[in-house]
Amino acid sequence: MSVYDWKYNTTAQTIGGKVLSMTQGKVLGGSSSINGMCWKRGTVDQYDSLGRLGNSGWNFESLFHYMKKAEKYHLPNLKQTSLGATAIPDAHGYYGKVNAGFPQPYEGAVVTDHLIMAARATIPNLAINLDVASGNPNGAARFQFSIKPGNSTVVRPNGNVRSSSANAYIYPSLPEQPNFIILVGHQATSLVWRKLSGSLSFASGVKFIATPLQDAKPGREFDVKIENEAIVASGAIGSPHFLELSGVGDSRILKKVGIPVEASRVDLPAVGTNLQDQALNIATYAIAPNASASDYTILNAPLTPAVAFADIEQILGTNAAHIIAKDLVESIPARAKAIVSSGAFTSESGMTKILAIQAESIITHKVDPRFFISHDLDLYLKGNASRLARKVFDTPALRQYVNAELAPGLTVVPKDASDAQCQNFVIAGYGPVLHPVGSVPMLPRKDGGAVGPDLIVYGTSNVRVIGKSFIVYLEKT
Image (cartoon, rainbow, N blue to C red):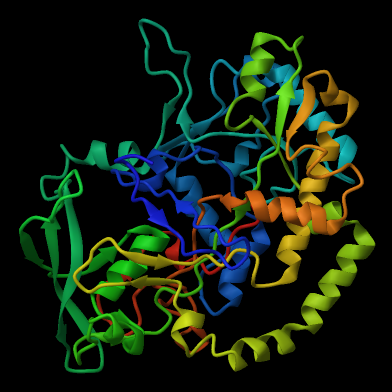
């Protein structure tokens, strides 16, 4: 962790008992300024599901228009294409502000080919995916990145530059928009409210403080008036926390920590619920002594330029996948009844996943992604995926590059490991992928939503939430 990280931590997780670090970017551009830069999209059906959940106008077609509008894509050149880079031109935009494409030079083509070859030899019906940004990510593919591609030279030292929301939108706008002011070194602490004639609350101002660089007391508090709208864009952890500090949340819980929900504020129990993230496990291999320097660089990189997105049938097999899918559908009423009877929607322990712990604090949170406890299938799938990953590295295509499995290793997880042994490896070593979503859910209010399809917070007239905190479920990629 660093000064560029909010240093969020989870509560001790029910599965495994670990406190996990939830790194999020504390810098202009947020996490887009520190992330892995992978450029991809979820499935068409997942985006369409947003509309089916009661959010009119939200679907792949409508969102795809704006995805392409934001994008300045660099098609692979002849050299990159000859090395295996592929793209579907219609899946991209070319006149936006966020750069994306394949890096130059495009290294590691041979080992990337072998990674894809090994995945396809192991995973049933895994096809080559020409473009993971097309709305159909299933298959073996080469990663694209949110970068401005270009060879670094003495004359041009800025090749392969990260494209973040900061250098795409903020920095270019500063000289052009005199009314666009950013205060770095300050942090918003709460909204100021007044009641409208109806039942809605109006955010009339925002309070903020000067924040020290080191662990010292916060500085002077300021406030500024809001004439039109307040836009809350603090991520899936920061946004619900700020709303709760502003008195928007479950009134019973907020009162317990000294944040009264007065008449001019909003009792909205959905705020801070539904936080989701993916779990990550890493297997480690020793690189073979005869691997070339470029092979070593690619295999030893934090993120290789190849990926295989497999579905449940490809992980478990057709018969097992169909049985599990049938069980999931048939068990929905029973699982829903169990959730309600346990008090998950009415108790502090069941509902609150992000909560301001002290009224005077602008930092302290209770963050609980609840890895692996929503359904036994999560851990079962993760264990089988780790077994499948081992098989990929045990193919002839990759044996020439790797010498031995270092972690988990055959003493921890033998070759003929049981489901329990595979799952124990997952539990012992998992961490967050750092793709948190869902904590200010966009759903009808009666269904547990906090914002509507216009992203206005229920019970307010002018507070809008943007960012992935309103997306109600994780994308498959």
